[in-house]
Image (cartoon, rainbow, N blue to C red):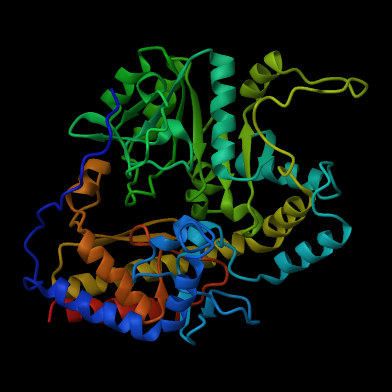
Length: 472
């Protein structure tokens, strides 16, 4: 049975060189500094309360620490990851729209493709000249032959779930505790003390999670096998390495077991690479030779324009066609299949995808991104070691995260044991006050083709100052 979330309590922390009360003391100082140096942003946010439900165009924008979000200055600037706010503060961006901006801000190839296609038409509900090239490139990069475009990774995940249920005639979706797959209802669950709860204070929405969801801890092969042997799971929806709860790497043998068990139990495997695409041109899947039945890529693939794609293996596509057959050109197809929409695969999106895949997220760009991410990881770990803190930085591709734990976690439960919300909030605010943005939800950073060594060094210098001041 799924229960509503219980109030979260702070987990006792390990002994550290941080003096008692130091986090609260620094937080007061940093909040005062933020209020002083971001006054115009605060005024705009207060004005926004009159028209926006949560003060800004998206309720996610209120999740930044400081009391109100930074308002970005609308002024021309060079391509890269740096920008100014309306108060005149400059920033280097490692959040990158939480991956939507993984191409960097204002890449010339993206801008040119947008401009060119906008003059022709943005949304025609018809394929345009770039469609064949993009389809072939998706197949080549990610190893699955058949693709469909959506407007978000959430939509792509929902489409995969619908298709999996359709061909397996099974109801349940299995996810890993702590996972995030967008607004997919089936994935809004987590394990707490062995019980299934709704995660992140999400309302149950009267969705029957107890009938349609299953959740186990990442890397727990016995629990995974027990859940799949019930024979009622249509698909496993998984990131190849968890990134949204604190980064959690798969243990040796986990993916081999996941693939073997899904095949043995007739369960489809859906790999969601919305974040782990930072691992390389073909994502984590190509780098590690995974063999998903369906594959989801989102956010980054169209340079920040809302878009995503999902691919199907040959065998999975043939099962889908048995239920939703391909039709001859003279026959009108009237069924919309329950997913997609009139904006999915629009001409503007496809044109930008071609630019991104051919000119931005290239093998050479990934080589630079991975090198910079390694530099970022090493700098963070050096500052941690200097102060003798029981923390560490971990990396998945071009993505780095600072974890308040001495060792890499195996699952969400272990991440939660070391969560320090007050310290995390202080780190975010300290960085923001000194012109460095990281993902606001936890301590995650991303390098992109527009990131340069000076950007990384700026973060590492501010992080070093933070730990020194924290331990003073």
